[in-house]
Length: 447
Image 1 (cartoon, rainbow, N blue to C red):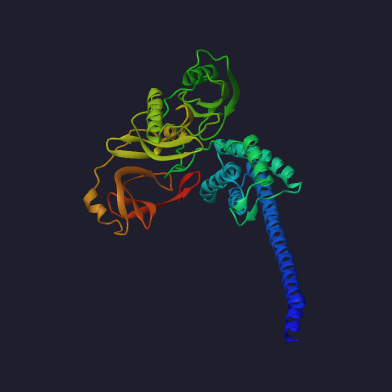
Image 2: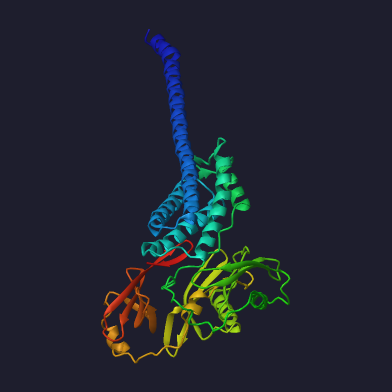
């Protein structure tokens, strides 16, 4: 009987246990599958929400850019610029929360960062009560036009269900069937170029004088201004230059659209007084090239020299979007003249000068009477905070908030892995200005 009992146990109990284990495995697998599906659905919902947040943020950026171009109130401009910067940052944050290939997100985040950085660069100007200049409004128009193009494609993309990259145990993200990256990559290829903006650097927004000190007396006729535009572009005649009439601003200038030797559209402003090109913007797309920042600086300096702007010294450089942006200031003896500012943009792929803004130079450039510093460099250096690891020091002239000028010692250095610039008066040793350098994806800003 005991033997029969054991046989019975083997015959019925063991299959029952195995069956129970199989049922438990099936139930566990089904439960696990449901949990994975629920997790995947939760992730997809979060990703979908991020896509709609990107669309919402960029839609408000587009709307506020449009408002900014017609607003004449610096107070309203402050509010609009702050909101544009906040929304652009929000769009970047939403995009970075998505499972995207780098090739899909790079161009979009570059454009959004450019919008946000430019808004912040204009914010300080608006907070002082200064209106937007003609050139700034033109750059805002470019940003708005590109934003409209981008938002049209974002809205079309968001109208259809999107398949996201799936999380797997093998390689974290499985990119097969990742429609979102494919669609954003297509937008990058067909969407707006990152615009060419010239700004930043210490005293790049310096107040201009009431009269152009760097321009010779005499008022040019439009034909002479057009001939100067042709010479500036290396053209043999003015056939490819179209007059846009007068542009009234800090400098009264003739405005032209032209086509250069490469077939690229070019916008120029030639001053009525003195007949000088004060602004040149080439509409060209640059690719990241092998020409170094130092080589681009040399190209820019030679270009300025060929157009009668010398001696100058490079005071600030940036590199992004296939472009090198170099700020130059005039130099007198050993002093850097920050009010006499020229900004040049050079392509890193071809070495071509893509943009020049010389308005600050022509408004302010004149021979100064520079006094000998009452406090020598060695003495003033001891007054700089010991926390600052000084890396550059020089004598310079800076603009003041009241439109005057001041001779100061400049000290650039590091503290806690951050870069600062400190200015001390040459007569008293008093600290008169401090800048902090903020590095962004599109360059550096001074605040």
